[in-house]
Length: 277
Length: 323
Image (cartoon, rainbow over the protein chains, first blue to last red):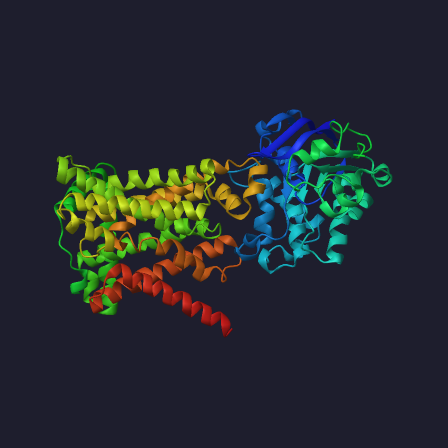
């Protein structure tokens, strides 16, 4: 079954094109790592996949429905960077946050025994049950990110989207966080991870999508490592690297760069498009 | 009685009284009379215990009941604003409510169309709340800039309308600007009491979506919580609170009880529910102490309440330092 499908998806902020003609699919049970340089449209693509924004062109489907019309909030969950001021300042306990996972299923009514059980199980399975009554703001970054994963578990979500979740974490909590994600993926959860650390993605993910406005690669991690996609994607808007390769050096945000540096759109599930001579 | 509490009642206030009294009377008359009767018994008992004779004065009882109501709804609604950096929403809506009052008084003075000022205030503040949202969504204006623009714009409308009537309505305006406890009528208390019931009921019912959006708006959207509807509800509740509290606190100070009790207790509570409760307690203390000081020393009531609230903030911060 397909969890997310993208078909010729384009998106721009005003005149600035950030996602251009992207097509690929995320199958249920995939662990997709979405990589690309800064400003490559990774986060935008993630929010398009979640239906938080509508594409300007093309079609995004989430579990078969147009993503922006998808109404089953309990099936999807989102984890952001641990940099939000709110999560540190606001008086709220771990349990209160994890309970939010049940909200899409039960927004107004009394919590049932099943709701309470799901919250307890979620706290238990990411090993934060002992800190359930602590203030989220008093936790370490690593613990806090586990709280957000627990919220997704409480929702019994099938699709977990994470946007650079370990940016603010130390190496050790990072490692254990990715082990947790791998464990979740083993139990069947579909994961899409936006990540700047390519090593993490090639080690942990089952699929890799490499993006820089256009899709440069979609396929298995091993094939990604052997392909030129990485240098092609990262080279396309990095002036210094490009200079050595003789690719033209116009402004990094110039939308012409993209069409000039490649011929046509990148085919899905293939290696990178050829670079300019 | 403190001279600072004395402000002349005006014809505009009288109109308001009649209309809101009719509103209150038609729906809440029975329970409201009972409520006032019970509170009179409680206040008289307190006066007997403490020897504070002013607790038996009906106008002081109305003042206390009013600030008790504001102390509940202010922090209750404000806590969903403060953690989203929307603290200025209350102030903005209060200033546009002032424009609503001016519109109503202007219509009456210039065109002899009787619009109760509080109705004008509620309508204009609600429109302003939706306007701020629209400005942010459709023109991409930063939300703090949109708030600053609507706040000053509202006040500008008010001041221009006042100038158009050769100062004829400025007496009535003063009361709304600075508030007054001495002129709190039965109808004002009724309005505040019913508003408190409405706001508490709305927050109770919509607690989960409000909390989710306050804590993590993107995740809430991903979970298909209707963030826009939640924002609209929050704006309207804020408009309700500032308009119903405006007569006592004054336009300029009314937003204080949405914000100060919340930041005072933000570090005390562990859970959100606890911090809500502490925020309400801080609001109650500020209101009761402020009104009492205003009476004893003849001070402006709204200002006293705000200063007590700020003093509470300072004391709590110092207390945490020396813990």
